[in-house]
Image 1: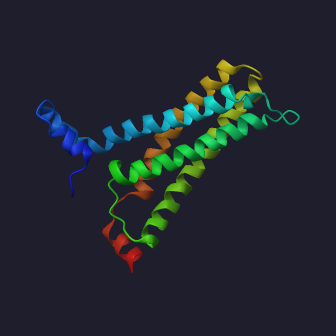
Image 2 (image 1 turned 90 degrees about the vertical axis):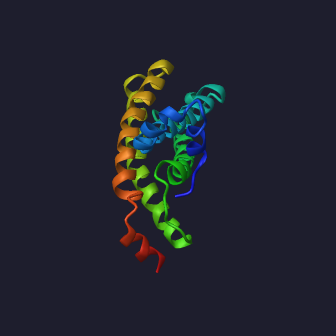
Image 3 (image 1 turned 180 degrees about the vertical axis):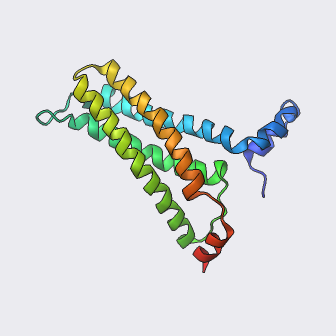
Length: 173
């Protein structure tokens, strides 16, 4: 497998002593790194929509439509970021060709769709239980993020990026 930026960084003289443990736990370390960055993208966009643009104040009856829309846009953006980083660096997908990548992407998005429902539901539940409380809303968002990160790793590892040569060959044909 070709060396990527993380292999090159670990090859620097100052970091060489950590190269073996890094390679041994590479997938988990990079998943945590990019999971954290994905969460940061999600939270930063949510904060922008809710607090800078004041979407948290948009209601349609009792439904927090602004909270919902800001949450949905931030989740979709972070899912796209996660797919690219997981494919390239975390799981080092070896699936090639438009059809193979489309199948892989569809599996990834299907797993994320399940956790999207959990995340949106958690935020909406927080809004219903604590209406108008911006601090509790953000805490509810953080709590759902922990559950979502764990479930997404399981879905990605088992269902999406399993590097099954038989599956890859079938997809390519």
